Amino acid sequence: MAFDQIQHVFVLMLENRSFDHLLGFSKISGTDAATGLQTTVNGLSGTETNTFNGVVSAVSPHADFAMVVDPGHEFLDVLRQLAGPGATYTPGGNYPPIDGSGFVASYAEACAKAGQQRNVAEILNCYSPDQLTVLNALAQEFAVCDQWHASMPGPTWPNRMFVHAASSGGLDHSPTTAEIALWETASGFSFPNGDIFDRISAKGLRRRLYAGDTFPMIAALKAIHLDDIRKYENFAADLQGPFPYNYVFIEPSYCLLNDYKGSTSEHPLDDVRLGEGLIKATYEAIRNSPVWKSSMLIIAWDEHGGFFDHAIPPPAVAPGDTTSSDGHNKYGFTFEQCGPRVPAVIISPWIPRNTVDHRPYDHSSIPATLEKLFAMDPLTERDRVANTLLPLLSLDAARDDTPATLPSPASSAAAPMLAMATAPSAGYTQSTPSRPHDSVNDGSLPVIIQAAMRQDIELSPPGDRGKIIARVAALKTRSDAAAYLAEVSAKKNASTPHSAN
Image (cartoon, rainbow, N blue to C red):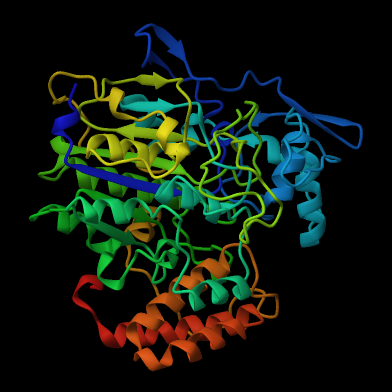
């Protein structure tokens, strides 16, 4: 096996899509990663259903490229999707039995909240392979994991934290601006056992973040600083020169204040083909660089985004670094239950073509893989028991038949999609955001604000720290958020640190 050949691990994490939604109708067949026998991905038969108001609806191929309504994916939304509309969770208790019966009912509630009259069965629509040409090409060329689950049944930020720390530090919900201001008063959100960036640095290894936005979510973490961050537009060129980075985390653009329009994150409110363009650009940059034969690229999605998936999520090992009464824990969740499946594709010239991996993973498998590869100790009990991805690197020699380019995203809009996926971030301006008078406590917006706040503090004199925290705590609306983000963006651009260029 080729463990010692891998010197660079790249992770690209996208947004809010379930396995069935993206790959359920892919019908991908290949070699079982564990047994070596022929197998097929655990996808859809076409007979899977949900019932709402007495109407039975079935899964269907050919989903729309963008959604009008953002499906619910907070803790309580996922609870009802997995366990039925009437499900409840007792703080500190067991997760209720899961049957996947509440996806349509949950989406109907989201449509009602948004004031939109929709065919609520559209939450069961899934993509056909010809709609996601890039993802399907990679899944067939390398390894696709069909038992990769979100680390907890809930939203983006706690799930992304598991990638970085094999824990969310007890956070089981999307935070508010009041919470992030309180965290910053204590010098930022941190994990009881640290995170993978701490471990990488302590080992004498190098890390780097490439960001599609001015304020990537990861910059909200205490371990991340301005000199860790570089604009994604530089990624391909950087790979052609000396590249000393052992761990590289790539964030898409979110365009959150514009309701994700123009985002490469694959958030449901914008065209999924923009994310396809980002995947293509990222793969081709690595594939056509000097580091290709010493690299592994992991592409995964942070959580299912409210989309249907037929597989029953398994129980999970609690990280063990917090309790259900921890201050970050709103619902008393024990973290002993995984969330729904998400797609994951693992790419390296050391992986046999057309590999299908049925072994169970969650996002903690990413730090577990890094720990095994670079001889580091586990962060929590979750990554201690997590399967690593290293057994996929099973070839005795690197392949010389991997494609230098991938198909373009579907449709005649492919060229503009690719241009948008690789274009420099537009940054933040004082223009009016969508829904300007809505609350600032809107999904992941407080996380973006925290990322900006941490950079604001880093760029400002030490005596300004308290004023900056108070400013953030006073933000009330999305319009307030837009003004603050524009201000910090201008300050950051004026400072022009070399590593952010």
